Image (cartoon, rainbow, N blue to C red; front, side):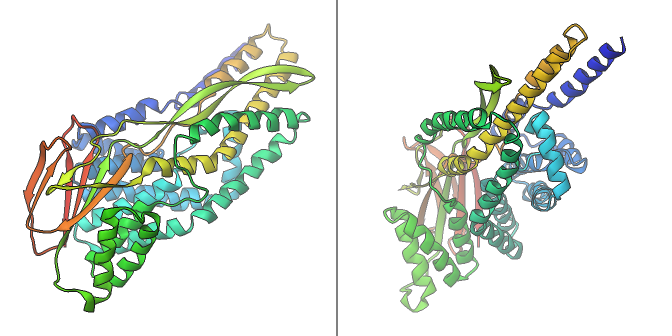
Length: 453
């Protein structure tokens, strides 16, 4: 009776952790809050409580921060973004060796969902970028400069970051090598899984190095509007090299170069810099795969849960601003896919290691189960309940961005590709303007943000 009670306690304990494992609905709720422009105080108050309770701060901070930004509450948006930023600094970047070891052990026996979300590199860069835009909207250019510099620094640190991720992978490999059938259980299975991912990556324009041109592009506009013309032009050179045929980029490069060399300016104009953020970016999904493992001379199949990328719908293919068509600039899906591809070997190794450990434990329990199979049943139930991939991500980032630059004549009209009017407003023709247009879907209202300087 005592043994059965212990088994029941063990099952309840394990299923308690697994109950937090499904974030599909949470992701969907964040998307819904963006689409429906959920701006009620109770929603934000509830999520601030989660932040104060240190409840998955990065995941909550990123998503709710963007929802607050979408509502036009830039101060509140930065409260959530600041919380995520601090969690990056102290809970991720400065995580102690002991805490890392505990996390590794926990995620070996359960899955990554029992741990707080660490975020992705592209998310960190966009965090600082959106914080900077929030400060610009609040006319706080000093703090905006700090955030853009942080975003650019994260760009420069990308290679170093991924080198550390590869180093972390060694801990998983060392654990897996304890298995005497390492070559078959790890190397052969890993090769088979990587071949399955190759077809996925063919859908995207991935690169060996991580670059997020959107952050650099926005930073260059900031420095132009802050009258640091030399820095704006220097930053924009990086964009010009990547997109040599984009007409809007060519036009903007010419403007920035003229201002960096003031004697070339024929007559000083004010400009509208248009940024159209289109649709929803890739989301993280999961798929489960039966994998053969050789243990004690027997071939045993075990299911492993792996992350994959799920495409989401786009909105308008382009917009017309004062009859000027936006040019496609950057595909953010490609950026997400590039980071995913770089990280996928580590993710596969970790999933295989977890499966090997769990399968070995199952067999050991079955051999020594003297309680009518209850312990074996309990172990199998727990393993199945905790076999989930981590699908958390920053929902609401754009699928792609298109841009335009035009002379400021004191008004803005925005039309879709069928010339339907979506937005119009008068602006100060004596200022430079950033016009950020966000569309989640063609049937939803266009969200606009105007920054004048």
